[in-house]
Amino acid sequence: MAAIKAFGAYLPSRIVTNSELAARLDCEPNWILDVSGIEERRYAVPDESVASMGVAAARECLDHAGLKATDVGMILVSSGSSERRFPGPASAIAHALNRDGIPSIDLPIASAGSLFGMAMAAPLSAMHGNVLVIASEKMSAIAMREPMERGVAPLFGDGAGACLIGPAIDPGAGSARIIDYILHSDGAFADDLRLEFDAPLAMNGRSVILQASRKVPSAIGELLDKNGRTAQSVKVFLMHQANQNLMDRVARALDVEAARFYSNIRRYGNTSSASMLIAAAEWWRDPGPAAGDLICFAAFGAGFNWGALLAG
Amino acid sequence: MDNKERILAIVRKVSNQTAAPDPDESLFDSGFLDSFALPDMVSELEREFGIKIPDSDLNPRKFESIAKIQSYIESRM
Image (tube, rainbow over all chains, first blue to last red; front, side, top):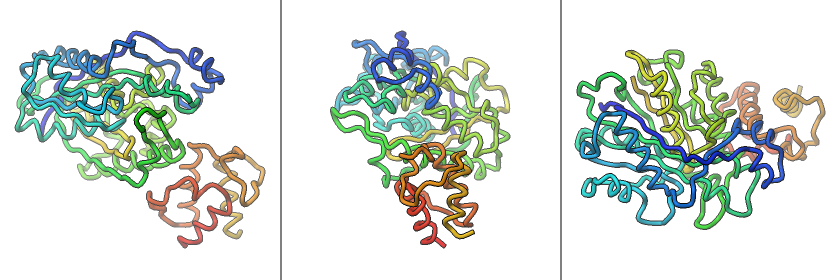
């Protein structure tokens, strides 16, 4: 199997507080915090795109890995918020990194796309060498579409994350071998979380929370059982940062303390598929993995698509 | 207790409320359930009635009122 070599992230500099959004949504700032655990999020400026944020995260990731773009053999880019129908941001990101010619593949999978990308990169790295998995989302362009819903608009933020996955040959300090993963899809609830062209985000929050609160712990439990591990043996859970209440619920279902789920949702909101890689980039920087640490990634999102990945 | 009373007890427990909703009243509109109390209620229903509710049946509309919950639970027993 392959190894995770490094992470990187990019967050736009503009901070949008609950107070700023509450005024536009006719609600109280504390209401947003209570229902989501979010205090602020970042919004990209108009000339920042899904591709440009992805490039910034990719460059930081390569820098952390001590590698150059020429060391990358394949690029996978997850985004549910790319600006156009086609081409997606993958080829533009490859071009900006001076890697025209290598396969650059778009994964239009909101929320869970980075997990799917990491899982796909693991076997693909045997053929292509280092695979750069990037997730970049400009959710503000969607969240701000009229009519804005107070239950939806404040949840989202912009940002990008990146992860370098390569063959596990002497992966070295700061790396983690990918042990196993599990991915699931179920189209029965596709309409419950969807984005039509030029329409606001449509979300049946009750259905999403109900399904996610069952499917995420179930997938994690299934993966741990399959590999003879327990939730208690996991050092850190790096989960899609959708909602603090949901992460706390998943922790309770697995009978582990909530603190073991790394959380930055208070600062960035839900950055869809980018969120798991941004969280991983922060955790990898401090404290980062030590020898023997078991790390569990997990995500759930539109589709529905969900799953988990074990590394260590 | 009959099934309706057992369901009502669960709704009161997960909502931390002592009032009794009308059988056809929406538990969401009346404030008994929110997005996060709903999964708790489903887990409690599974425990109380000894059934496993498949994910494919987890449509919030099936659990919107006491009457709808009772109808669904009795169809699974």
